[in-house]
Amino acid sequence: MSSAPNGRKNRPRSAGNIFQIGKPPSRDPERRESTESSRKAQRAVDDCRMIVQEFNTLVALYRELVISIGGDIG
Image 1 (spheres, helix red, strand yellow):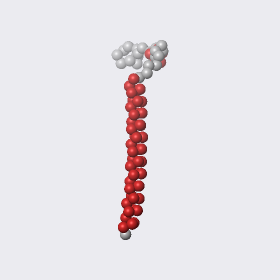
Image 2 (cartoon, one colour):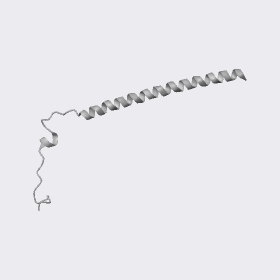
Image 3 (tube, helix red, strand yellow):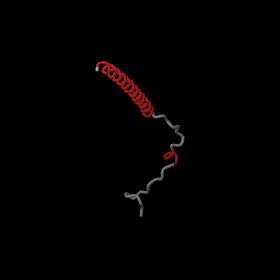
Image 4 (tube, one colour):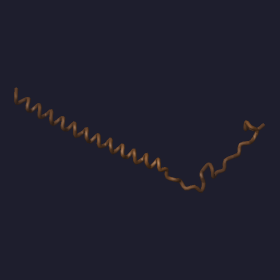
């Protein structure tokens, strides 16, 4: 007979409830914080990449120095 298990018919939702008519889209502060934290994380990753690149450059220069000194000894 009725599709509802307790015998009452389900009330259809109004379009206002489904589409939130009349409510301006609110900015979610958690989403903004999440965006800011992801920017900070990306900046930290970029900084780490730069530090690693500088370190690798220094290691390469040190190797060249050691090789040049070692070549003079032998």
